Image 1 (tube, rainbow, N blue to C red):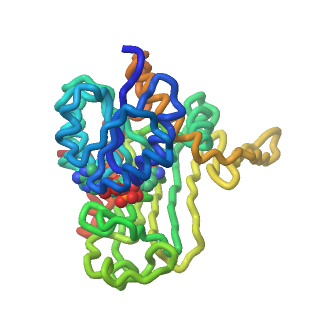
Image 2 (cartoon, rainbow, N blue to C red):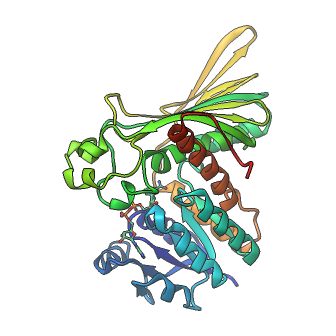
Image 3 (tube, helix red, strand yellow):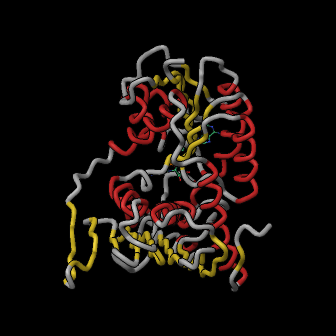
Length: 350
Ligand SMILES: NC(=O)c1ccc[n+]([C@@H]2O[C@H](COP(=O)([O-])OP(=O)(O)OC[C@H]3O[C@@H](n4cnc5c(N)ncnc54)[C@H](O)[C@@H]3O)[C@@H](O)[C@H]2O)c1
């Protein structure tokens, strides 16, 4: 096998991932799948995806296509596991957008099936693979932060509830599984992926059910009526190594926009974004190093696609297996469950 024949499912975030594959040598997009046919035609034309290209409206039929080696899953959260499970059943490698699933049970089922099938299984994580996160993660792994004992991660929007797909506001959607997952995953990864043991949190929906807080400040009473998810959550996760992580996600708030991750180590600290800054004490003097990193929105998708292809063709160890997505899902669901129960909950004990 000297190339990977890829199918893209879901034409929303599928667009960014498809652009990544188009710029990746040894990857070829051979199929698109979406229930909205016109979205496939538009994407194929816009990205000038070369023929032959097969369009499917049924992912089950697509998974039976022997000309496909790997599937990118970019459907709404509630459909990640059904699509990926079907792909894995047909021995296809899978790349799944975040979050892995809409609940812990299906996430576990998918990870078990993918690992048993022996296919490459990877999360498509644009924050974990961003340059800032990779730089800090690399420095932590080399010991430059000493012991990492605390983290803070947040995604705050002023009026940013996604309004283009009802999947976001239905059960299994919500702010924490949409944006909290990016902040949580990247912080946990930079901290060295310690084993989570418990979470305590608050969460709720203060804007969405009122038809407020939607994208571009446009009221959406019809989405407000079907609102069944959180629009904010804030919690604290405790790890087996004694470290702690404070994590927050607001889809809407009366606060400025903010996406930030902060890492506290015994030898250095970091603020990851705008700009990436490393804090140290050198010769008794506090020294702050700020890095200007060129914004490269497209580059991260090429990084993800390239790593997926190299994991398949070269046997490179996958740096973001679905198992990582499962642990993040366990933390997310514990945060939301803790908020519902009004008490701390254990993670990974069942
Ligand atoms: N940075 C990121 O990694 C990032 C960014 C945005 C969205 N996402 C994730 O991508 C997913 C989709 O979000 P979006 O914003 O692209 O939504 P979207 O609504 O724009 O796209 C989802 C697409 O899936 C299609 N779809 C629905 N059911 C289907 C089915 N049964 N078979 C095939 N296609 C089906 C829809 O028609 C739609 O075109 C979410 O899980 C979200 O969390 C990730």
